[in-house]
Image 1 (cartoon, helix red, strand yellow):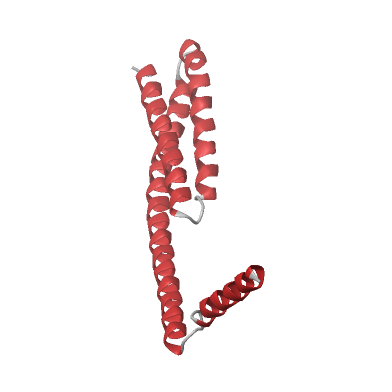
Image 2: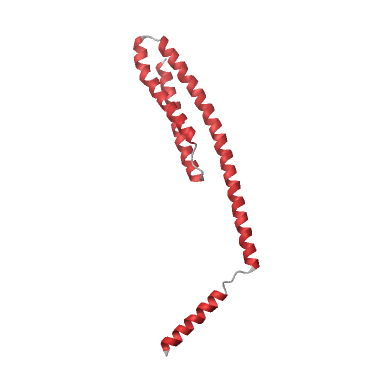
Length: 144
């Protein structure tokens, strides 16, 4: 008998629980509104992220173009220099060109679609840009 009353009690509990979980029109409307607001917020964040990426890419490409001009200038100066200086500069310029090419390739990727992926991408490009700028400064010192 206790087993039967336990099943009956559980059934009553389950019925009460499920009947209280019916969706009301107000709850449905609130859920739709919440989904719409969430979708709009996500679209706003994605648009802001795209603008941020585009601005960053423009600035990075401009910096890279200036550094590329510097590397070309150093290459011309190296070609006009004495053999001893050429041998010193050749590996430095080759390394700068390698770094420049890697940075251009990295900019083509332009990071992922999430904020975390974008931040990681940007950190990597900033470091590569810093390394390239540092390398051009070291090469500049070789011409002194």
